[in-house]
Amino acid sequence: MVALAFYHASGHGLRLWTCSALAFAIAWAAARREVALPRRALWALAIVVASCGGAGAWLAIFGGIGAFSSALAAWSALGQVVATPGLGSRKARAPWWAAGLLLLGWGLSLVSSGAVMARPTSWIARMPDELATFAAVLSLVALLITVYVVARVRWLELDVVVRSTAAYAALTTAAVVAVGLTLAGIDSPERVGRVAVGVSSWAVVRVSLHANGVRVARVTRRLMVLGLVGSVLVLMGTLGTAGKPWEAVWATLVTGVLALALGAASPLLEAPLRQERGEWLDAFT
Image 1 (cartoon, rainbow, N blue to C red):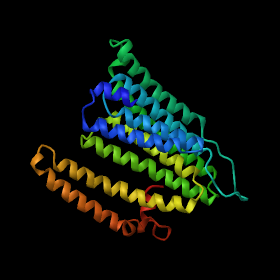
Image 2: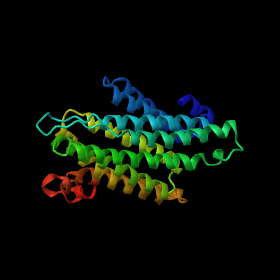
Image 3: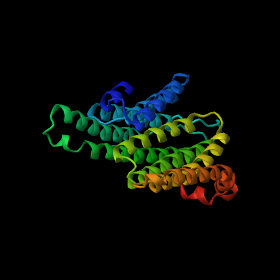
Image 4: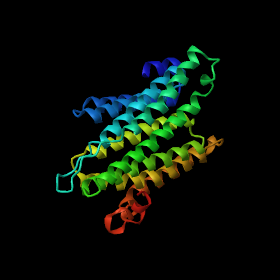
C-alpha cells in the first residue's frame, strides 16, 4: 500500500510521508497483538491510513477494503463484549442485518472505484467519491445501531453498559470530528470518512474486548475531551494559516500553547463525564 501511494504521488508531499510513517507504526503495533480481532482492526486501519497518502482508483479500492474490514471487526467485537458473569448475563450476537449494511455500502463503493478503471463511461463510475462517503456514513450508523441492540439486550450487565457508552462515545466523536474536518476543507469527504470509520472501529474493538472495564471508562472520558476540544484547536490552527503563510509561526505557537493548556486541564474538563456528574455523558447515550 505504501509503495502504491509513493508510485501515485511520485514520492513527494508531506501527507504522503506522514501517512506512510503512521501506517508503518500502526502495522508494527498490529504485528505485536496476539488477539485476532484487535490485530485485524489495526491491520485494516494501517491500510486505510496508507491509502490516504495519495490519489487514485487502486488506493481508493484498498482504502475501502480497509475501512470495510475495520467496521466488520467492530461489528464482530460488539457481539463478544467482555462482561463479568452473573445472574443477569445474557448472550447477544451482533445483528446480521448490520453486517449486511456494511457489505452493501462498501460493496457499492468498491464496484464504483473498480468501474473507474474498467468501464469509465458507466453510470456507477461517475460517483466513486460519493459512494465512498455514503459507505462511511452507513458504517457509522450501522455500528451505532449495533451498540444500541447489544446494550438493550444486556442492560443488566454493568460492564456492558460501561463499554457500550464508550463505544457510543467513540463513534459519535469520530462522526463529529469528521464532519468538522470536511466542512473546514481539510481533506475530501471520502478520505475523512474512511479514516473516521477505521479509527472509531478500532476504538470499538478495543473497548469491547479490554479486560478492565474501569480503565475503559476512564480512558474514554479522557479521549472524548481531547477529541472534541482538541479537534477545535487543530481546526483553529489550520484555518489561521489558510492563505497567510507569513502567520504560520504565530498560529503554530498559539495552537501549541493551547494544546498544552488543554492537556493540563483535561482532568478538570472530564469531571462532568464521571458517574457522579454525568451531564455530558447523557448527551452521548
